[in-house]
Image 1: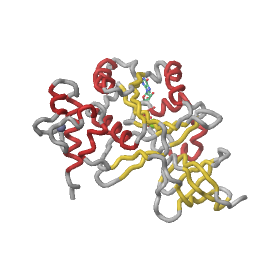
Image 2: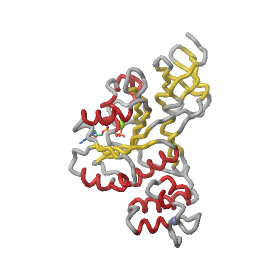
Image 3: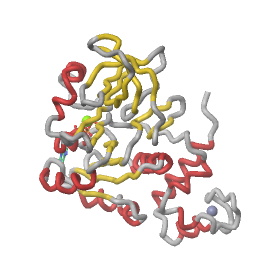
Image 4: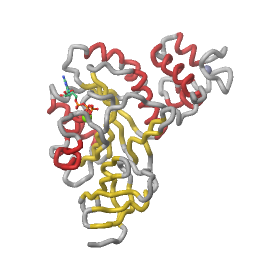
Length: 301
Ligand SMILES: Nc1nc2c(ncn2[C@@H]2O[C@H](COP(=O)(O)OP(=O)(O)OP(=O)(O)O)[C@@H](O)[C@H]2O)c(=O)[nH]1
Ligand SMILES: [Mg+2]
Ligand SMILES: [Zn+2]
């Protein structure tokens, strides 16, 4: 048993407990040193064996990117070193446009490509959901419409080429079909989760931990399942930077009379003109306005 340091990939984490995959694809339980748990799924780490069945993470390699949200008091990292984000919303339960916009802004600010997936288009509310997504399509955002359960083969065909050769995080509110998507594309998903998590999740279907899966035996195409989110704080972002992460606002930035325009009440604001003209949707503008208040308010004590 070698105790030499080696490189690995964090495929699952819970508190200070991690599962690390070595270069041969073997998975092993690891702990971090000390009390701090500063690894996330997707991290490349240096680790060494401490016993036959356990290892210790010594160091986290520098990250290419990190997707996280920052609520008022808590920072929650989703995953690191991502190539793509799939934001899953569904016809049912009805999605919050604010949550969707927040996830898109977080991805933009982290420099990660994000696509929206509208799932459960087999359900009667599909047309209404499609209309709510129209402003997103109009701003150049890719929106895939799928019925992961109703038309699984077609969904698989749409997703496979899109996800090839990448590490993709599947994110979204609870019950939108994230795990359904994983199970559709990862034939041995249950086996990859392993007995540890089956014991943890016994009798429940809602996902409680972030988990990395390989879609292919060659370990090139990765999908990461994540627990549904409810809150999505963006306190890592300064209010004046918000508009630059919103593609429908972007064409007007720099066109306002004042260079430090907040696009909320200033005269000669090009964004407000675009809202009046219907070029920016009222719902997107409302979300911007609310986010501005939220991000510029001091924390509540
Ligand atoms: N009608 C319909 N139901 C679907 C579709 N895809 C998934 N579902 C159902 O939606 C429910 C939730 O699916 P999950 O895949 O567990 O959702 P999730 O996003 O992983 O949920 P959390 O783990 O709680 O975040 C399940 O009952 C699925 O069978 C679809 O295309 N159409
Ligand atoms: Mg799930
Ligand atoms: Zn302005």
